[in-house]
Amino acid sequence: MENSSLPVLAIGSDHAGFPLKSALARWLRAAGYELHDFGVHAPERCDYPDYAHKVCRAVEEGAARFGILVCGTGIGMSMAANRHPAIRCALVSEPLSAEFARAHNDANVVAMGSRMIGEEMGIAILKTFLATAYEGGRHDQRLAKLSPPTC
Ligand code: RB5
Image 1 (cartoon, rainbow, N blue to C red):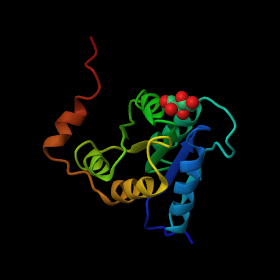
Image 2 (image 1 turned 90 degrees about the vertical axis):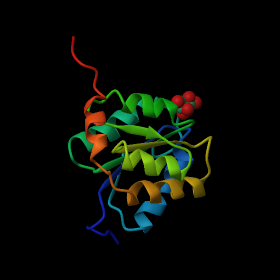
Image 3 (image 1 turned 60 degrees about the horizontal axis):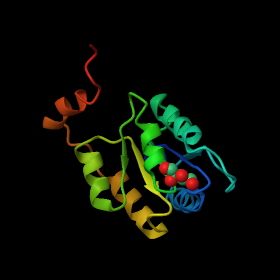
């Protein structure tokens, strides 16, 4: 059953990320998260940016608080996600990076590689990512400088 005190999430993957995405989606739903699953819904060959953009749009528009992206390595998904000005996507493969991505970088999207990590590691990353708050303070001015100045 969904727990309305938990943040709403958006998730997406390409064909390579499909196995890990499916496992993460199952775990998140069992843990009570409301989840918008933007696909893929079967491991058919596709282009990862299409799914990165769907998930990032949901976060930008406020339909989801956080996004989760999975491809083979997580690299392509994170590249596509970080083209969105309001998205701070962190590619992580262990929980400590997930913790710093939230605490220092206020990451609102996390990317993972289905060919790089297993299901247990993916769940451990999500648990940490979702449990860690942004620290603010000295990090605010650094985040404000992420967008290059206009010339
Ligand atoms: C698909 O083969 C693979 O290139 C993709 O999932 C991803 O790893 C790209 O960064």
